[in-house]
Image 1: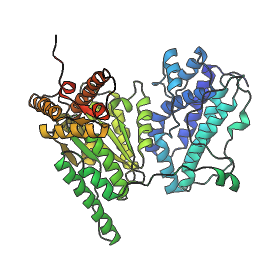
Image 2: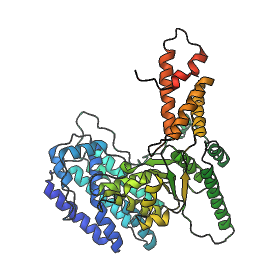
Image 3: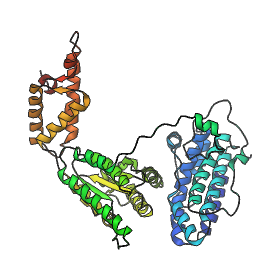
Length: 483
């Protein structure tokens, strides 16, 4: 194949994007496509190069900067940015606007989403051929990306109106002697079914049974403190159960948001409760999987235009069927900058909460005052987050109970004197608490330091007994005095 110059690639890319955009019949579809398409294709370009296993050169940087379709969005990435992007390229994530295309196809019996899958294949092949040819590894990645999109089309009943493009038909060179790094994990299609003998001989890992609702509630009750939170969770479960019963009885069910705001200081059990709540939602039939995906601002926001939507969409995809837990969510709103990328992440989140309202729960968490400002910063947030759980600071006796439980789980025992020393320290910690008070995190630090001191002490014993290996003494718990 002839090597393409960056200018030639830009021209072909821009023409292809413009031609497809002209097919979109609704203004909202055209706007979403126009604002998102370049960012996604630059991300796919990085992943394509990672699949090919080639080292990044200046020619590829020029190609990356040629992927733009609007006059005001030409990138100016430097070599190190592209090289880092290739190294960090992750799994294939369908564009956010692809869900809109499928929705339109379902309503109007069209095939815009399948046409986009074909255009994606052709454009990725264009990128791959820009350096003179398409390798087998690159073709495999292109096909895997296309298959991921077409699988979603099939699930929506969107049938093909023409045969799809097979990237393998365009392979023109092979990697020379060295094995390429594994391509980013786009879903792979199985080319052939395993034989019956193969199926019987393969050892299938046994799946652990999912915990029942009663078991999950027992775990919730076993948490230290959090009395009001426990009541709120159980009230929420009752609300969900009654809604299901009303639906079965053909009674009206008012709209209800199950997204939550967790308010409180660090170390008060917010993540632990969120993880239990994700499984509880699964047990009562609200969610299909019940996993918890935990992120903060850095897990949603990128430093370049167009990349935040990709990063946020990837987090949402991982959380589908479960709970997306956003810690310190107030950091997404920068009051000092109207152009902060955190606002883009919020818009993507709100759209996905609407598109996947039947199988995605979002929980935002952080300090009480800051979270209230965050929720009121966007009308969309106010309408979707109307349930608040307050996590109070642990009391001094509760901190001691948490310390005891850490000892038990870690295989340590507290001597009577050791418990007295821990109680004194935790009482003082609670009395002196300020805005930096870490609750259970501070207890964890105390426990880990005690274990370290105990190890230093026991290591000096010639033949320590089992009891000595387990026992924590006052000198293990107390901070050593400064000389």
